[in-house]
Image (tube, rainbow, N blue to C red; front, side, top):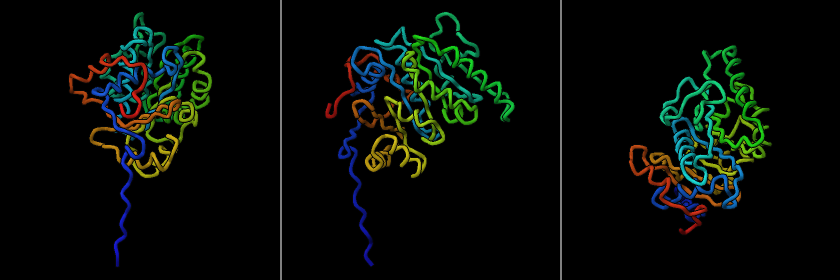
Amino acid sequence: MRTAIRPTPPSTDELGIPRVRWVEDGFGAAFIQSWGRPGGTRFDPEHLTVYGKSGGGKTYFVGYVLKRRALAPPHGRGSHVVIVATKKTDRTLSALGWPIVSTWPPGYGENQVIYWARAKGISAEHRIPQRAKVKKLMDALWVPESNIVVYWDELAYLEGMLKLKPEIETYYREGRALGITNVASMQRPTGVSRLAHSEAGWTVAFPPKDVDDRDRVAEVLGDRRRFAAALDQLDRRKHEFIIRHDLTGETYISHLPNPNQRTARKGVTGDRRKGVPSRGQ
């Protein structure tokens, strides 16, 4: 009996998704420069959604790009960021070194903060004050010219367990008019508002946990067959990810520098190109 020969899957280059090096190719600096300024110079909030299983690198990625967006021009000094955290503890977020606040507004000069809304227990009754705390922040930020980046860590928990889906959807539908940039992370693209997928200007996908998650993430990226093949080829040891810009369709595979490398910070100011590098650069 003959053994069926499986066809060789297309390479990422054949799929039109080249690999770029975050620092060495200047891609990371170009991304920071262009995120939120899709036309080149004029500020226009672009939401960012990040998919990946627990421990896969998504929280580190978000913290990395938020910190560099706050530091690097043209966003520097005017970029206010608040991370909405609900876990009991998170070493990756704590490692940012940003002030941790539990009330709003933060202190003078604290432009990048972690708003930590912890629950005292795991029961439904403990989530009631936690929900109220996050809702109070959302009401405070909902003002004209808010001009802030809001990171929703584990969006599924906020929408499902804290029942904040209507408020989150309002942030996605109308937040850009107030200058609000929504950044959301989640383990899989299910159980959350579709607006978190459809309204994202940038999408980042780490290797999914299983085939079902892979296929759903591939659909969100825009082409199930093409992106499923690309997701299968991501190097999990390097924490590789796919990054895609919805407006231009430009799509790449990359990975962040090792956090222990001193050269990681070099990419903040090492490249001043206005846009994301085109294919072949």
